[in-house]
Length: 155
Image 1 (cartoon, rainbow, N blue to C red):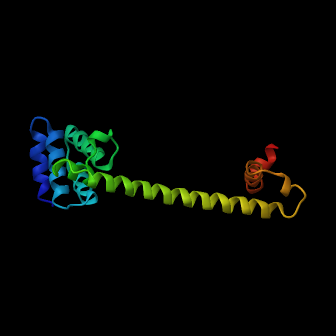
Image 2 (image 1 turned 135 degrees about the vertical axis):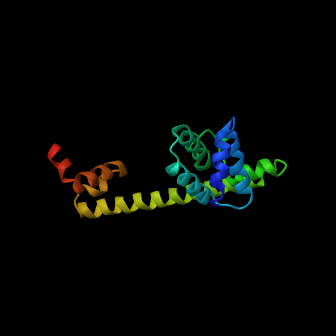
């Protein structure tokens, strides 16, 4: 894909370079290039260019690829395939379901960690009379105090 660097330079020299680069990215995604490979090429180009205006445009398009932009400017396979496949939404829906699955997995991991932390706090307190009388928030606060000796000094 290194021959694309000359294509990038040509696109940057034309009017509306952002739109030209967007089209290049869409074409590359359509041909099966990964976002990571495209970003690596853009990053290499950005590092080797001496023109700050070119660098700004390339960074903007890189934001479109990574998703650091408004949703309608995103350039990833789910959106690209939807646009180029007679507005077939299955790619977009599959992508969104994958995002939801990942969020659910992260939420379960968070809950497991919190449960572990509460159990650890109860163990730190031992079998004192206070354990059965505290709610989860109070236990979490005590856990933080017991773990952080600097907090102990402020009480």
